Image 1 (cartoon, rainbow, N blue to C red):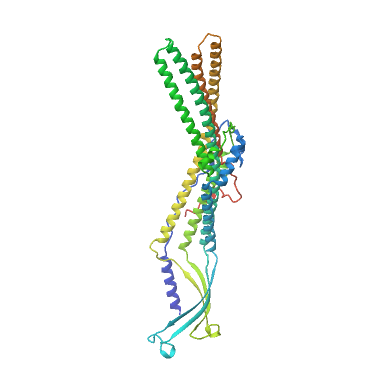
Image 2 (cartoon, helix red, strand yellow; image 1 turned 90 degrees about the vertical axis):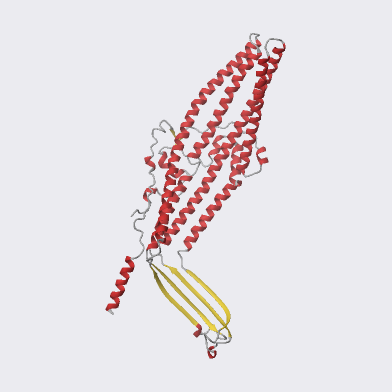
Length: 486
């Protein structure tokens, strides 16, 4: 007996020594520390502000825009896609949770067969058709000794939360896109007005030039130049009309409606740009106020749990199974006491050789973690730089707009003086129309800068999270949840 125990121990030792191992496999990705992304100089002199509100678009001051965003959030089909993905991820998390629980099955069957006498003698029932009736109930439970199933469930939960946050990010992006398309529609209408004014000016100048040529004051060169100005103005009118149509079409798509929906949108009123301000401690706080960053953090969390689940595959595991039932052949009663049967048995599994399947699976999980970390780092760096760049662009636009408004004011004064000179008989109306062309050009530049300013304000709001609010289950900083590298 002693020799048998020694032999069993030696055999178990060799078996354990030959088991597959996860040695040498580990992830390489390291999440960035947000505090390492310095912004003090880039954001120097910027006023502190609160994070954008959930209905940030109402601060732009247009009731029609508020209604359009509400309509888009209700009817846009892209949101249905994001919601469906979130529900699918939640279902996968539910399946992973169910895999942790034991299973109980039951069944019953009646079947008939003729057993040949070569298998069973005739006196035992061979050579005759007989019925077999049975019923059973079974119980199976794989003990999660090392927490692999729990880790797999946590990974699925992390992926589901990421998908849910991404659905919220889709809504934030949609609201911003509607606002930006609305800004473009307002700018297109302004361009259309200026194109019409330029066409009227060019047509009046051409008529005066024609009269001067007929009177012998000017030559036909000036007339052809006037013709070119009129043709150019007509081209600008057509371009502006097309811009209005394109902006309305973009809004129709964002609203999830047909092209006629855009035709019902009234001309936007002038929108108020957001103020130049960002919250303090931007990099650290940004990771909780931008939905794409929160989703990326959940992806990293899920990938880390996936590694933990894969590592448990290298460990021995125990499962428990039991079955009980009744069976009877021929005319026997399956409910009688002698017809019962049952079996109970725990089982131990230990991977010894699998051709590298477990190591390949773990290497894939490591790579998925590194990919998730790289995507998180890229998103974080892009987010912080996006805020700084758009803030700088807005500051520059403020300076440009101030200079442009001074230029427009000077052009307006020149136009008034030219009209006064014409009315006083000192200057010609053709000269006044030439000054009017400079004023229209200045107004065009002002309208463009104002549209860019509002558009960049919307982009800055999006860069700051667009009203996203962190929840209680937001993952902790990644530096404290990186999987073991041993």
